[in-house]
Length: 434
Image (cartoon, rainbow, N blue to C red; front, side):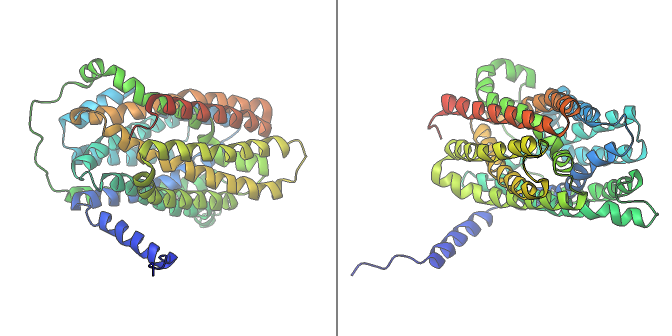
């Protein structure tokens, strides 16, 4: 007799055992960076959700167009620091570069709370962008050096997944934290003081998040000649970098058009309060975390670049649904309270599918560049992605100011076209290469 087909439970048990076997390969240094990422993710979850509402609460001159200016300022800082950050990450131990990035971020958040005026907000938002640039450029090559080929994809996906789980709780906290803290001082849930208190409470947490980094053990210094300066590496390998970075540039243009304003989208199109939007963001973060954890076995089964293209393509129908809401609801063709649930589900699935591919594509890139150029590769990836976040928030903000909530219909149409173009480019450049 033939052996019976394995039950679903048996398959799940085998899958879980294989999953845990890869996780057990993570080194102590890797786990310390993952803890740092969780603390930073919690802080960033509160900041990302609360910041736009905080700025809009400051008065009429602080509108959606000014939000676009702030995002562009942060992206400009990331772009300007791309090559210097790569040089710093090559020259100094990544442990101290990550610590410096965390401390700079805490200072930036504190400045945003204490100085709610146009000039300081732009300056400290740029400083926050600089801190993220430093941390990201140092962390990725460090994880490459502290992981083996077998578990490397799992390390990068776990870093993204655990950070996103923390952001999930940050989004949940951000939905009620301003109201609770503001009530202690007699302020309403959407008053400026309430948002300041919520953001200020995260400053101490962002500083505490760097503590695990102090326990990182020094690894053996790389052998061989000292690395070339980043601009020299770029001149030597510009063709390789151009090919692997073009998809990130196109996706960054789409993300910059949409992502900084998603909380504004749900408030202005569907007239929902902060708490309801916070639940949607939190569920989106949770779905994205689950997607990150599912990424490594999917990449092992389908191949890295095939997984990237498949998940990106599956996210496009959900973008179309979000755009339909921005067209139908302001036109009075559907009831906002009903379409809000459909838009919320579309946001959650789009977020999970599109972001599942990020750590997979990052690993794909790092495996294709020389080891000494890995910091430069991550820095340039941040640069080209932030080009979109520098340019497109201005476009999106103007569309919203000009057309009101219906402006988001144009926004999502543009994002859909850009994401489809990125998939075509990936197919043309990489095909079945894995």
